[in-house]
Image (tube, rainbow, N blue to C red; front, side, top):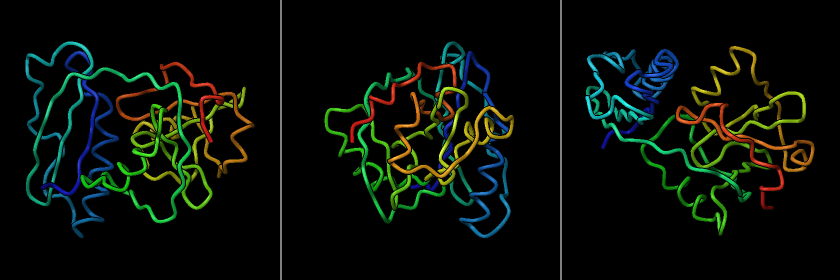
Amino acid sequence: MYPLFESLCVQDGCILNPQWHQARFENAYHKFFGEKAGYNLLDKITVPQQFMTGKVKLKIQYGEKEREIHFNHYKTQQINTIQLVHTTALDYTYKYSKREKLNALFGQRGDCDDVLIVRNGKITDSSYANAVFFDGEQWITPKYPLLEGTCRARLLANGQIKTAVLGVEDLKSFEGLKLINAMRDMDQAIIPIAGIVH
């Protein structure tokens, strides 16, 4: 099995924000394998004809020497309710293929659509996306996420969002939130803060 992966959004045949994924791939490769990547993440990848229309998820699983490519049509899941779950020892610094601990936390969602993971008392991410919170004026994302997502990095770089250390007690200061990743940008509906179940 490949130890790491990247998920990219393909919209109407166009791979979106490839430079952000390439940058994360190069960083993760260097940290994980101890050397510079010997290949380009997207080298010689072409979108098959059956995936040239609509929103498509491109998943690239990779190892030290090889990669495996999968395309799948994607439908954005509507998130209405989120269960807070707590953990102390969870490391997901890179997009590891092994997600057993994340999946176990997701399994604690009860009747909710997803979970919001609190690590050592601080808000981090959902099971598969970074969180951004709206206070009525600006968008704030946790300073220490489980994973530094590519959408989060891009929004920080262009000044659309800011970071802050957030605890559970800070949630009442916000009107709502969005869950963002490569497949879910800021053009989605806001989730009311009342949708977070404690």
